[in-house]
Image (tube, rainbow, N blue to C red; front, side, top):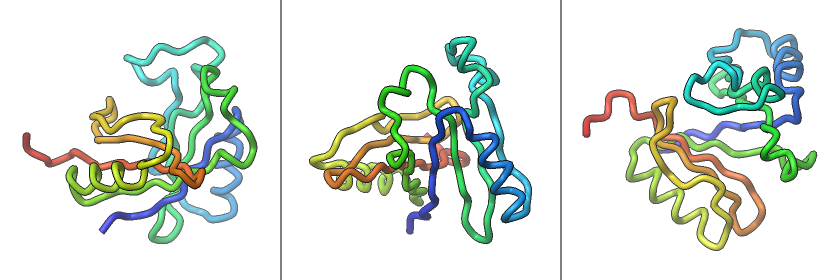
Length: 142
């Protein structure tokens, strides 16, 4: 069964927000990177210090987030900065869920293998809800 986690986007305040959440919930980040840390990613000087991805465990769940890069800021509005991130158990389940949930919606990123080593896609469903499908490829054999 897929695991659900909230994913939050910010307009340059992700690090500040997640440091605040850490003081409220405790714990430590299990992952933190900036856009400028990704060698293969082209980024403007303005975007290099933005948060690429952060993960903060809260109980059995993970609160995740990132900043919106300049090229996507025109789409950012307070209130549409939330995703539901699904982590399916297989590539096949990832494709099925992606195809079924995105039907009639708008695909933001098609399912494909990503530089961080996962099989990933994102979209807005026909009801306006944003989703991320992220299958971890570690241990998968081709």
